[in-house]
Length: 141
Image (cartoon, rainbow, N blue to C red):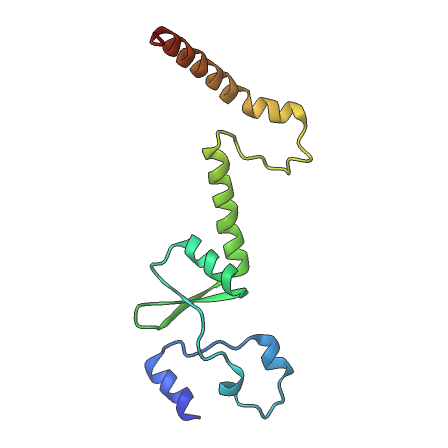
């Protein structure tokens, strides 16, 4: 066992990442320490999910190690986990915009379905605008 590997086992810290394709395409005699990225991108256990999504997007990685404050590997976030986070964020944004999220793409949704999802918000906004206009006209002078 190499000194680097035994040192890692004693400390249990993340020291690098090795993409599977690099491992498969390398000759069998190549040392892992020469193939791996010694400065891996990772997130802390306490970091927000959206931060992890941005880190994965910025560094264009498929998996992202999760470490504690001591650098000990706790787990790995995969790209499908991040897709779930982004899907939830999309739903939250749609609800902030006053619309209910649809279960199907907008191109497949009919006009009637879109109308029924938004008519109540449109009526509420119309009434609020009418009230605001009345108040503004009253205090215009």
